[in-house]
Figure (cartoon, one colour):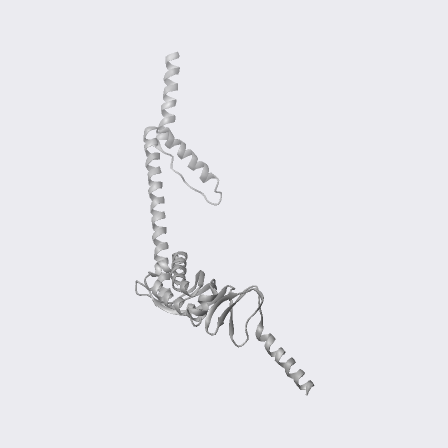
Length: 259
């Protein structure tokens, strides 16, 4: 009989000790309830609870990376897109995450989905494509306001992908092509305008100094002479001949006067 009692006592001790001694790791907290009443959060480390009276729930304090499923959104300018995102959050108040909400991870996921649809539905497509950082900050602030009573802190929200319909992609490509053509035409027109301005300035200078026209003529002859694959007949301007004739007449008259 003594062995039976000893065995019963040992068995009771083996059953009670795991129910009494609790160990919580560094990244966890143990929320204690005594007869249904919240006592508080304990940990990390080893502590004791009263068997059959106290009940402990462990809460993980590490950052949770949660993917927000792809949501169909109609933007402010009536464009249908599918958008998914990722949310980074963690528990900062273990007691509130257990008492104030049934499942803080599922609740955060649901509020993230609805907030994503609401915020992006108030934005235009161009804003969604070009001002993503602004929308990320807005989403983070709104979601964090909703989860704060649950003891959950949302640190970052990032929009991952924006999926457009094939027709919308073609329309955007055509718009981008038209924009590039418009810029090219503007650049070409600016170049023509600058070139015509320079030509007008050059014409004004040549009109004031006729000798520059002769210099330009000689330069053109030099350029043509460098091309040896063809024979060119280039007319000699009368102005150039007249210049030499006048020079010869002046020399002849000077000789006669000297005699």
